Amino acid sequence: MPIKSLIHDMRSRSSRAVHDGSAAAAAAAAEEAAARAAAEADCLSRSCWANMPQELLREVLVKIEASEGSWPSRKSVVACAGVCRSWRHLVKEIVKVPEVSGILTFPISVKQPGPRESLLQCFIKRNRSNQTYHLYVGLTNALSDDGKFLLAARKCRRPTCTDYVISLHADDVSKGSCTYVGKLRSNFLGTKFTISDGQPPHPGAKMPKSRSTRLVSSKQVSPRAPAGNYPVAHISYELNVLGSRGPRRMHCTMDAIPASAIEAGGVAPTQTELPLSSVEFFPSLPFFRTKSNRVESVSSGPLGSQKDGALVLRNKAPRWHEQLQCWCLNFHGRVTVASVKNFQLVASPENEPAGPQHEKIILQFGKVGKDLFTMDYRYPISAFQAFAICLSSFDTKIACE
Amino acid sequence: MSSPPSASASSSPPPCPKKMITLRSSDGATFEIEETAALQSKTLENMIHENCASTLIPVPNITGEVLARVVEFCSKHAEAGVDDESLGAWDEEFVAVDHTTLFDYIRAANFLEIPTLLDLGCQTVADMIKGKTPDEIKKTFKITTACTPEEEEEVRGENQWAFE
Image 1 (cartoon, rainbow over the protein chains, first blue to last red):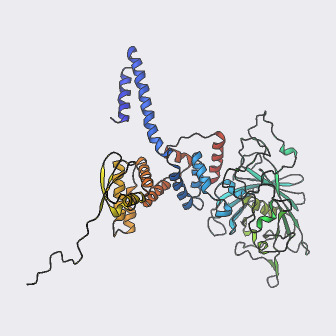
Image 2: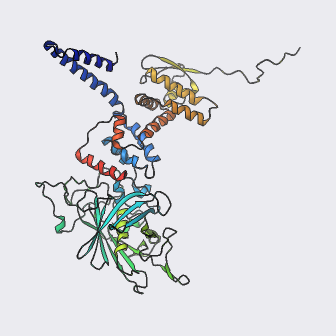
Image 3: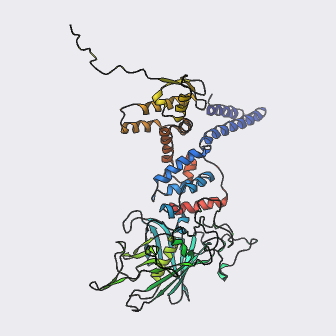
């Protein structure tokens, strides 16, 4: 007799006996047996997938990862990583970092170096009414399309500086939020900027002492510990020799990326996990899973050897076009509106002879519409760092028309 | 007197007798399968070569019900002259079964090393997963393992961003 009908039979028998005192005990026992049988039946149907051998589950997940290579269908890969621990472990093993695959998958992807082989095409939408900026990765080769949302930034003007708070949530852009990623801060004149990361850029990174980063003691109850504040880059804008009639000069020191990153065989630090808001935040807490084989390129110490300085990026100097009477840069079709904000950044050979690695464009930004800008970036900088650098171009007052 | 051409009129040689292999399932049922069809299974291929004298192969891990279907699959895929489109349609119908049966097919394909069936089975499961949220996947596959609050929060944050 099938289990389900057996249970039904037992239940109907037990309900008939409910008013009889002596039969009540028998009814209770029958009910209990029925419940046990139901649980057993349930277990059998539950167990087949839950006990699927790892190698078969892996086959399935590999197929999903391979076929859902672009957004929005890429979200299926993220969904699989959220089912349970074993699925998560497998997915994280299968998915390659953007440096290798050229694809952004998890939120942490926006903190990891971009692809080595090509520029990742993104675009930024500006909303003047609420002083916010939204970064998207393009879904096609078009200058803009529906895009996949990556990061949002909100401008906060203060008496002596301006902050751009950067978050993973399109609408919740505040420093206390668990989606806080970092910020860009400008000085009073808008000539110098600092990019700060909410989590350590590499193992052993130290946070500067400041009032806003007081740690919460373990005895206090705090739903959200304050996020960290690790400076990861400094940007400065200067006029060139032609003053405000010429293009400005940009100088970006990427404190968290060694200059050797762009050499053959070089590596850039790669974060692998975002901090959890419910975890109390201690600067020495490592956010790098050393056991994980995803962490292929994390430098073992801060910025490698001591002789290895930080990577410096400078903007490529435009050429004066005599006939068109304007400054020109070849944006390869990705920028269509002339603007002093447009730029291309290349690695600057600070203490060494220039080589082909100093020709590659690492970040390109420019206007394509009223409040629409393209942003193309590649290794060794991340989408977060690229976004912050572009925001500084919006903010700086140097050589504005 | 010359004989008139026979009704069958074909000049092709008579078909060779196909070598048949007998498979025995875990519950004792036996199934016949052409050797050419059986060769789609790497496991069976090895067994055939090892036991060249005997044509009865025990398959202890698979029940009769599932083995019958696997034999059907291999026979179909060994058939000559079937175009890709109709084979694809046949495959689609083959995997239009309940989860338990699909899972049994995949396990059988894995044990018998039948790449076409394994691929088909895994692809079917992959297609069932695509487009679903983690909760929907857990429901479909009846996965109930518990997560810590931290893990849950990490997953919630990731999926909020991914589904934005």
